[in-house]
Image (cartoon, rainbow, N blue to C red; front, side, top):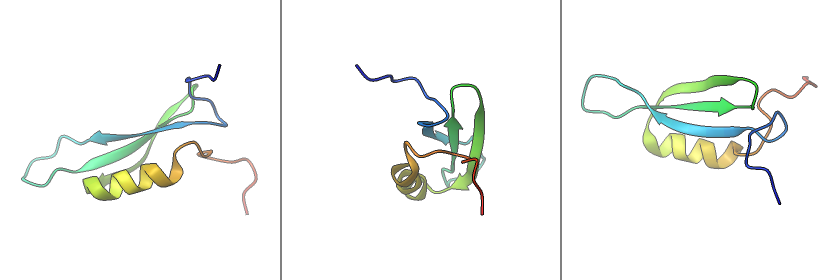
Length: 67
C-alpha cells in the first residue's frame, strides 16, 4: 500500500486558478510537502502550468544540497 499523503521527499504540486480580472485565465502552481504549503510560481497560462506540473510532480521542492 502506497501513501497518498505529501511528504518532503514526495511533494504534491497543484495547478490553481487565480482570481484575476480580464478575459485571460491565469494559474499558479502550489506545492504541498505535508508540513508546509508554498506558492511555486504564479500568473501562468493554463497550458504552461499543466506542462510544469507534469515535469516536476513527485520531485523534491527544495533539496538540501544546493550548488
